[in-house]
Image (cartoon, rainbow, N blue to C red; front, side, top):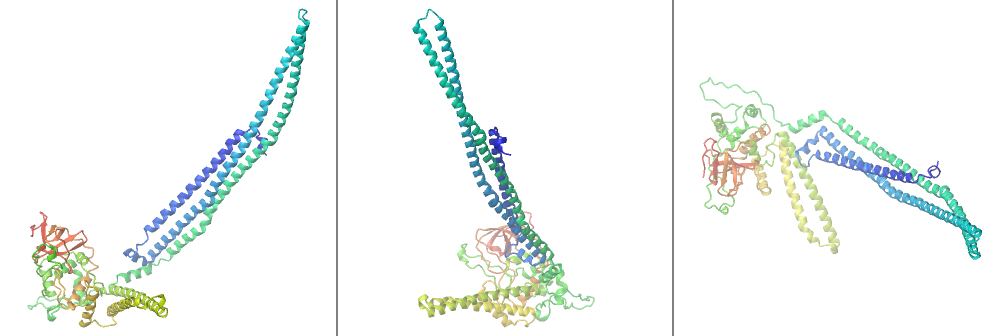
Length: 615
């Protein structure tokens, strides 16, 4: 089967068919390109999905991934990321192995087709030219024959006419002979051209056209084979990534099988175990006796020296406290019982560069404050805002024992890592200094003394810090007895050197929340109060705003519970002055605290109870 013999007269149809074949190939290339774009888009969406659900660094969400279920989910996200990578591989392989090659092949195919059909048209034009020559020779031979026949008839007519002169007859005879010769020449020329045309025509239909059509046929068959190979490659590209995709899916299954519900339950215990003992039974107190009520061992106060004595983790502490609302109790413990500072003499901020300081007053006994709570309706404070406005103690004493132990252990580990890092740096500097001493041309050894001293000083500071936290950790774990007052003061002295704003020693404190001027034991007692209810009542709603205020002077709230304001600043009022000279305000729903009432101009809402303006 050959197109040259079977389709010798279908030149135009073959031209259309081959063009259609190229169009089909270009359509397939477009299909593959769109498939690669889909694969890339799908891979990108999968990667974005994996990234979206990845835990954020240094966030609470990252801590949740210690559970086996969360670890399995994280493994699933990682496997999904690898799964997306395989779709990118599919796109890359299809582009390099199919699209690029086919685009180049199409260009070559178009050039080859153009050349073949150009040769065919050239052969057609040649045979048409030969045909025109044959037709022209044939018409000339026919014309000459007719002219010779007319000349012969005229000569015979003149020869038969007796009235014609001999000269005219001779002239007619010569004309007839000349026309006859021209007819013979035209015949010979026509015969020669006819033979030549027949030869050209035979070569055209039996040699040139078959050869050209054979090339076109081979070109078309190569195109068909090429598109078939591309389809096989298309399938193989997908088949090559199936094992890796299978491994990704196997990884997801393995991660799912690694989930251990018992281990997760144990992690929950370790994460939230407080270390407290359950509350004991409340003893019966007989009020029928006509005697003064004595303070039992389940009350919040002790008659010893008129000061409260709160035992950490003891039964007496847990018998009554879980039934007391935290914000009410903290209101009694932290509400202002000291006069606020007077307003500055000048409205200029420079008049009070460090802010006013509250005068120190002796705190009331805890038992008296608790009796006040039982007999009167105290102010309601949001404990969350008190936490937000305050500073977390450095020894994590506001945490339950078990959580405190974990926090201290983590802090010790971090400090040890820092010490190791600084030690390695010191060793490196020491080695470099030794090299400089042996080879002075490489550098000046004295230039490293300052850096070496700085690193050594940092190591000493870190070691002191680590020793301090290790002592607290040992105290929590029960390896060491409770620290003495002298140890507490030494610890507080070191804290004051390294952290000016955070201190755990027995230094005097000044705050609108109450005057902290007692010994460290009393301060620790109030820390215990804050710790006991820290986790139980942390979901209370913040107090609503009852009005607004404008700062008349600049106040730098450097004490715990206060808030800094700038002259002219407008803030929200959430608790008005209760007669103690302090007003509680809020800024941007995030920051709140107390400011002296004389430092602000308050505008309460009309529907607020007891609305009035303080200037």
